[in-house]
Image (cartoon, rainbow, N blue to C red; front, side, top):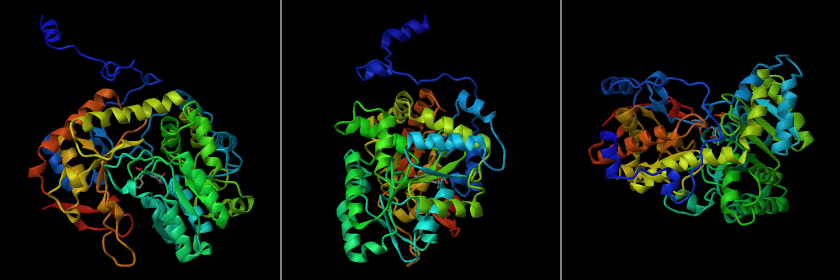
Amino acid sequence: MKGTQHMDQFTPKTMGQQFGRRSWAEPWKIKMVEPLRMISREQRQKVLVEAGYNTFLLKSEDVYIDLLTDSGTGAMSDRQWAGMMLGDEAYAGSRNFYNLEAAIQTYYGYKYIVPTHQGRGAEHLLSQVVIQRGQFVPGNMYFTTTRLHQELAGGTFVDVIVDEAHDPQSLYPFKGNIDLDKLEALVQREGAQNIAYVSLAGTVNMAGGQPVSMANVKALRQWSNQYGIKVFLDATRMVENAFFIQEREAGYADKSIAEILCEFCSYTDGAWMSAKKDNLVNIGGWLAVNDPVLFEELRNLVIVFEGLHTYGGLAGRDMEAIAIGIAESVQDDHVRSRIGQVRYLGDLLSAWDIPMVLPVGGHAIFLDARRFYSHLPQDQFPAQTLAAELYLDSGIRSMERGIASAGRDPKTGDHYYPKLELTRLTIPRRVYTQAHMDVVAEAVRAIYEERERTHGLKMVYEPKYLRFFQARFEQL
Ligand code: P71
């Protein structure tokens, strides 16, 4: 029999056996499925040109496996869907708002909560209220929307992340840490009164999903207390950060993700959140602070841009889904399987020597396009090229996180040339299986083998704000 002959030639191994441990599995089973389809290579070529080689401009229908982002792309649980049916769609004082408020107070530990339609809504409000024109906003690497809102409020972002973060090959375990010497130098140069606040992000997205240690945030708190400078946290992927602390930092192995999350937040003055990531919903965000005076201002401003302070641009049902999602998101087995899946893909690719950011972070694999296409100069958009080639080969959609995302320096008008030129394969939460990861890994390997024959891109249309979303390219 064919099957038996096949078995004679090699012994298949489970993942656990390959790693010398018992296998674990996702802590859920699938109740509803969404069919996928793959269009032909000729069709992919055509739609890619029509999209100006920009994966943001592809139609979702033309995508086979969608790794553009983990933002709003996760699967909600049956409990969350049930919660959606309990939406209290009152204009004011919806029951679901109070449930959301209680969940944030319980799991993140902040006192006052303002809901927003998504993360950037919260960034906008905080930036407008806390930044005065001409002030500096130091942070552990920029994020596109965060920095833009800081700049629109008249602030200047200053990167104070540790140097290791800019080196894709450094194995430093906490590449998201703030370099306190850089922060101190900034205060010495500009004066403490000219610092709006420290903008601290958990598992730093643009660095490759790299965590901040508990020791670092504690030291940051002590440092900032000396000068009376506030620390605000981008909590978007802070649950995933807590997992890395549990895994890597002495003294935390026996603490739960929930305990670590709460302790970390306790060293900060407030947080903004894109609930579309860690909080396991398709839309939503929030802002949370401890200072009642600041809260008063934020609660007033939210009405101008988002909606009344008990809904902030969200339906009651959305707030209910976030409240339930928060409680699910801090379960240890959930976080382990989520990050475990990202690592599974990372282990395959690194075993094949595909250049990528190491250690593998929480939400994505970041391919190092600079080394992947070492023959392409940065202004030929190697990371954008990689995203386009991957789509062409296999219908897999990824995202550029390099020179196109970095944009231009508002002062000089020149491109920012970021050290990291990356293409992100972002894994949605609770959506794809291990077999999908195998397909992705093989596709990356296939384009890597073709790398020397690959041409770069030139930008032929450049929008003013966040250009990477709508820019168009042509092949050189
Ligand atoms: C991601 C996103 C979504 C996105 C945003 C901008 C360009 C491309 C894709 C959003 C974040 C984030 C962090 C750390 C704030 C936001 C904004 N990330 N902070 O990674 O990662 O939140 O999208 O809900 O407005 O694909 P928002």
